Every structure is written in C-alpha cells, then in structure tokens.
Length: 259
Ligand SMILES: Nc1ncnc2c1ncn2[C@@H]1O[C@H](COP(=O)(O)OP(=O)(O)O)[C@@H](O)[C@H]1O
Ligand SMILES: [Mg+2]
Image (tube, rainbow, N blue to C red):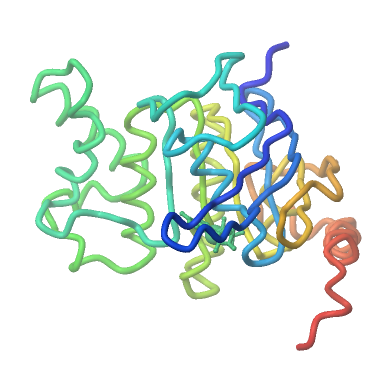
C-alpha cells in the first residue's frame, strides 16, 4: 500500500542571508505514515519538529531528500493538507462559523453550501450554539475545537498538528484529546501529531517517532500496540501505557536533563 506521507532522507539547512551562518535543523530523516494512521513525533525543543511540518505542508522545501504525499512529491502548499497549531489562529473579526468557512472559500462551493458544511462541522464539535459568536467570546478549549472544525471542514487527506493541546489546562486537554480522537477516527483522517507530552503520544497514537536533539534525526520508532485509540482516557488505564512512556523517556535520554 502507498503511504499517505513519506519523508525520504530529509535534511534541512537554514542559512542566514546576511551573516551566511547556517543551522542544520534536521538531518537524513525518514519515516512514513500510512492512510488513517496517527503518528506522534516527539523530540527535544529545537530539533526540527515544526520544520518538518512546514516542509510537509509545502511552505518550503528540504535542502536534501523529498517529501511525498500519496506518492507525489510535495512542491508547494496544497489545500488537502490541514494544519493545527498551539495557537488557534482564528480570525478575530470573523464569527466562528465564518472562521470555519474560511478554508472552504478556495473550494467551488456556493455560499449556501459553505454555510451548510461549516455548520455541520460545528455541530460535530458541539459548537453549533456558538456559530455566531466571535473567537474572544469562547474559552481556549472551545477555540481549539473551532480550529479543528475549520481544519476538518476542508476534508483534508492529511492533518498536521503542532502541539495543539499544549496551551490548554489539564482538564480541557483531556476532554479535547478524547473529542479529537473520536472525530478524526470517524473521519478516517491521517495525522502527524507533534507533542512534547510523552503520555499524550502514547494515549493518542498508533506509532511514535522519536527524534534526537538538533539536528533532528530518528532515534527510535515503534508501534503503540494498545486498544482504545478513539478514547485516550480509556487507553491511559492500560497498564502497558507506563512502559511505553518509559521507553520514550529513555529514548530521549531525559534522565540527563536538569529538572
Ligand atoms: N525559518 C528559519 N530560519 C532559520 N532558522 C530556523 C527557521 N526555522 C527554524 N529554524 C531553526 O531550526 C531549528 C529547529 O526549529 P523548529 O523546527 O522550530 O524546532 P522544534 O519545533 O522541534 O522546537 C531551530 O534551531 C530553529 O532556530
Ligand atoms: Mg515547534
């Protein structure tokens, strides 16, 4: 089967135009994501995680190697790829439903069809009652749900998540992780989830890729062979969870870090 996403021997060097100084963000990195799979990527701060997502989304290309989506080389941004960040990036001057419609505006839908799709997505996120509110009127968790509605409304073939839950309080995070897990499983969406929360990586993913410090390269990669991928809280009750978290901890050499 073709992978949905293939990173093949990616190296990315950033060179400062003024000083000529260069930074190698990632080096010789390869991993794949199968259709419908959720792969978590963990690694120390600055090891190139966001850089990887930017290359997958086509914002810029790698210095060496290539990124393939469904076997096709990525050469620029494409509407089939959804992006979700720690910051929700909702437009403050647009209502929630108008924010969800935003991504649909590049599609050949009539205004009425756009509205219909956006409202259906908000309903799924239990935000139907807030469609006409503005972002500042919503809590952090609700705004992230609205951002997810906007991401899924375009029916993406791939969703890139850059620490989407990290700014939320612990309770909101649990609720949102669960909601998110169910929704993406229903939609059958393929995801790359960047996180520095080792527990989150274990309870939400099918597989984890562990990166070294900068320049990032893959140091470990393994399947999370546990039930309940659609219910992270339920999965967290599995005794094996802690063993996976420990494996990640060891792979990242966190014992050497100062607390
Ligand atoms: N556009 C850029 N120009 C120059 N350096 C960059 C750029 N983007 C990222 N970097 C550098 O590449 C490294 C990896 O950054 P990043 O991908 O943001 O790491 P992470 O998301 O893992 O914390 C960092 O050293 C960062 O300073
Ligand atoms: Mg980052």
